[in-house]
Image 1 (cartoon, rainbow, N blue to C red):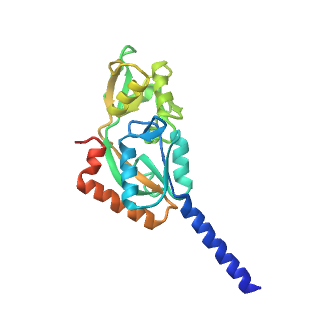
Image 2: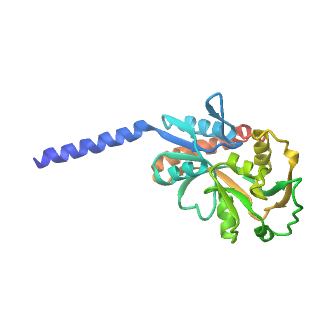
Image 3: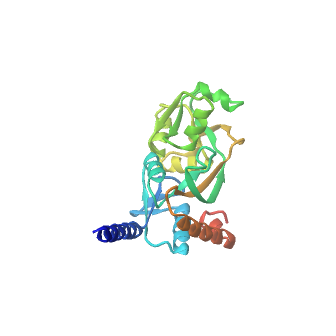
Length: 243
């Protein structure tokens, strides 16, 4: 009887492992300039990098899904075999993910509507007087909270966040220039309606791809090797539109 129970337990573990492997990798992202839907498919420069990396690493099946950022982030925090991008690498997040590689370094700027009240900022701290739109769990929300900002208006995604600026529900938005241009295009407004009032140069955003912490080390190691090959060959820069 003891042998039968041991055999059954071993068989169950093998079946569970095979089932987990068969499920493949879940790739999660948000709607942004890095990833977006076109004709029902997730595309975008960072999406191309993720696909090229996973194919080169021969990690099996994967699926790429766009979620609201908070949902994508929670999934990557709590589930195994999840790849998330774009994810800013910060000290607060350092031990919560297994980092694969950096896809971009960008600077966040504070934007207002050009036709709104004049705002002059000589320091980031001076922006505490104004309502600021942020996306839930985004590093900009975390950064501003850490700096003591209390007038933050939180949205679930970039589109809603940008719309709040257009509707005068917030006074400022922290965005990279490319994200600001993309948000303007998505909202069908001219980028010239925005005015940059401050650049957070002292803390650039290092944008990465990363796996969930419970993802097997071998999976992460293979993805890292594939990423480094893409980088060394110049393919990473080409896919990200740097050349």
